[in-house]
Image 1 (spheres, rainbow, N blue to C red):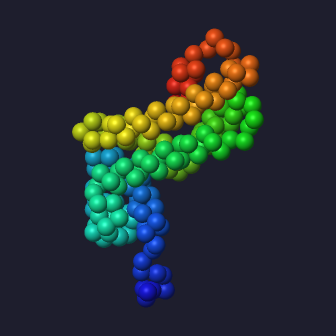
Image 2 (cartoon, rainbow, N blue to C red):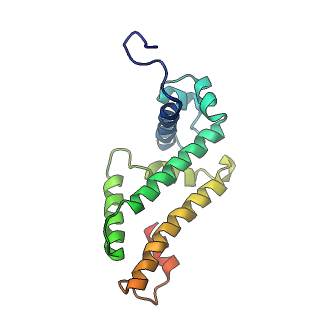
Image 3 (cartoon, helix red, strand yellow):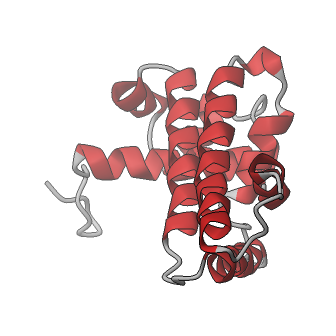
Length: 166
């Protein structure tokens, strides 16, 4: 069914969920996590508040889905490099991350920092820690590959080098 302007009234569920997650990320970027109210999210997404709950069940579910989207973007940034050399791959990741930070919204970095800064009262500390761990492991794996290939000195601490990149 279409509206008066010819656009579909409803989106497929996966598209609507993405639309809402994008709105959560935008609202979190602009207002922070504590002020990412369902009213602001609904307005940004262009949907009724009830639609949010239809797709996510709770505000916490929306925030968790936004964290999942951030993790996916982080891992995509790491995995998208086609550089065969581990050191060149780390440089490429850093360059692309810097380019992303230079965009209007800063990619995933701005909402990610807002989630980290939100504090424990938001109730997402474990989810945030898990995302940090998975991003860290992806970078540490590249460092380990560099050490195995001789491109990174074997006496360097892989964990410490990976944390530098985060």
